[in-house]
Structure formats: structure tokens, C-alpha cells
Image (tube, rainbow, N blue to C red):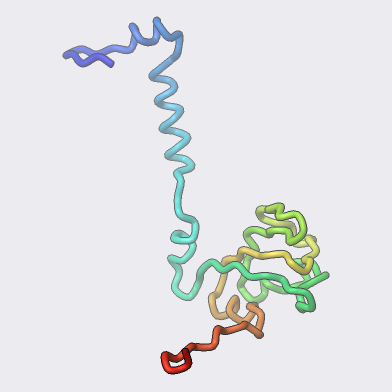
Length: 134
């Protein structure tokens, strides 16, 4: 780097054979157009909406049905991503014709109240341990 009253890139561009100014512009363009952001933060801006991940357990009413047949869209819930239970493969923006399998996990955006109803009803809770029980 040089610091002077009339800086230029001719020297460094000649030595490296790299269009430094062009690379800088392309870098800025890529990062302004697609800045890194916290998607959860951006999607929770709307009141009552948020992001939730929930499993498709065996015996679930959603197992062995397509995303379209699950009627999640009618509940104002959009499937953003599906993680396959068997392989762990991540499918971004899965097609509505995708069949849900037991063990799959869905990352969804939508109404928080609707998504809470999608969570398995039987949730194991840890029994509180009182001090006198030790």
C-alpha cells in the first residue's frame, strides 16, 4: 500500500497483473446485493410470525404425505428447509410434492401459534428435583 497525495493503482496492478479497482467494485457489488444476514432476525420482524424447526415423528399425521397435502400453507406456514432423517441431507425450499418421512425435520416460517400446534403433543418434561429429595 502506498500513502501519498495522488495515490494510484497502476504500480500494484502492473506488478500483480490484477485489476485491483475492478476486483474492489465486484466485491462491493456482491456483498451489497447479497449481504450476510441473520435470517431468523429478519423473519421475526412481523408480529406473531417467526421461525421454528419441528420434527416429523413416526406416527405423525404428516408422515408419508406430501408438503402440499399437509396443508401447512393454509395454516400460514411456509417450509423453508427440510433435513432428511435418514441421510441428514438438507433440502432448501423443498417442492410441494416432497413426501415427508418419519425423522425428517422441517424449518418453517409462519404464524407462531400455528407452528406451536405442529409440535408433538407428548413432550417429556424433566421432573423438578426438590432439595429435600436428595
